[in-house]
Image (cartoon, rainbow, N blue to C red; front, top):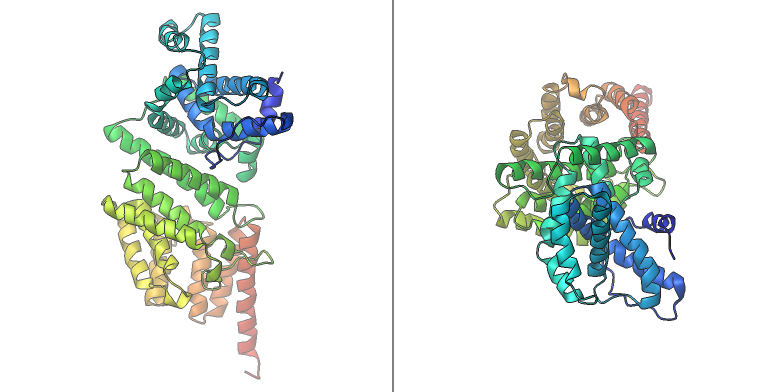
Length: 459
């Protein structure tokens, strides 16, 4: 007999939903450990679908999680002896629904749900997995998509959406989420609990919205996935420049969303953006842990498969007439670099033109800063400084390290080393990331060396 504590210890290992695993049968003679591994692999594949289906029936994510865990406990107890059933997902769902019916009977609640679900379950033959599977497949895509839309509901704050999405859809533990965002575990746990309570108390239905509401909710879903990826791609704090696990979770969520909403061009655009950016991971950090810029990266280390996927995603965006989407434009910008075999081959004029289009869609100071960088590369550092001057006094950029790093770079290219050194020092002072700060202090040293050389009598 396997108790709930044992199941939770197994659940802590299940952090990568959606991995491709070969069909597993009961390993006769393989022992309890082999059987448990089979069950873990199956549960990892079925977890989101199971919770999504249950949440739609019971209207409560916390209860859906408990029922899913009860089904896992039952599987750990039954399968090693009886063998893995022909349809493991159907077995888990049926078992969880039976637990739900028992719970409702005990609490004398949700009588109308009990009547319909009890009839469906009790009229099934015990081993008729084909019937259960057909029932699951009727709207399983909508159920999974409804869970993503619910976890990213605009009623929740950004932090709550992000934590709940990583927990429920991404399968990360509270400890892993806290570590990824350098936050206290208790803080993350409170966000998740409050998010679930808000959704439950507000009576939010587990359905995919339609019309204008769907567009608004889709923007929320995409934003959360984008935030997760960005925090991993350019870690705002800590010792690591990249948090690969966060990026991988965001890409996994992006692939789920594209699979469930294949006609949404911005879903394709976001996934393409993430894949193109992730293709450079191995080249962004030197063996000694220091940061490498696009100019100094070894492009042979770029992941060609991810680049191909990203470019294919952009083709899908074009086919769906979504090239002016916010994420599609950013993906197109990433593709400019992906297509250049060398840094010198980068089409900076194309990049500047794309930023001119993006700033119209997203008139934000950060986009304006990146636009200034592209214009500096395309038309000279003076053009970059002119555009920077327009946004330097933006309150939201006060203390923003990349602003002063960009200014330092433009000044350095103009050989204005004293001013460049001051800008790099200021950027380093604002950076909370150890690798980024070390890179900026390296630039400070370069400027200082150039100034000393210029003052030397021998020069």
